[in-house]
Length: 169
Image (tube, rainbow, N blue to C red; front, side, top):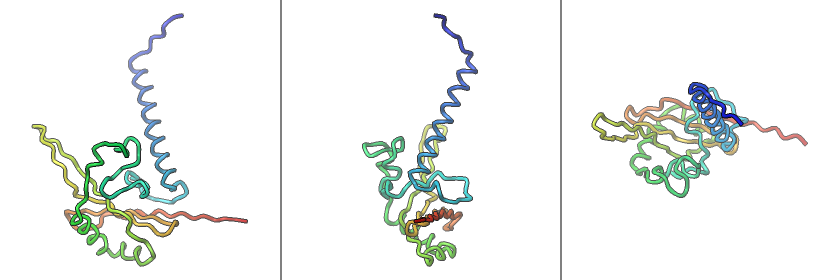
């Protein structure tokens, strides 16, 4: 039985293809878990559309394997102060488009900070939550995600996901 030699470029290409497939599978799994497979959205960034049932404000990303999980991981150590949460909610609720959503029956269900990490040339690490995403939900028919720039005290983006179910006898 002979050994087949594969060129380095071919190996790299094969490994890259497997990695891309794994990432796409993960995205599809998250979309399915969120129940957003029948949702409509014009946004291209779906990084933070994790299901709220797996989200605890003191521990973002918990419950998802590969994102900290229930048994440990550095995401479990993040705690959101009430002052930060209140500041984000005040900015969110002062926006006229968010007010319209709240008047339509949406409720605020969570605040998730986006933490940017900077590593300096000397290895010094600085982390800061300058942005946050506020989750809103309307019954079982709609979800909305509001991006808040905390430093500029303004809403920068609103993504609304809706689901229509038609049941026939």
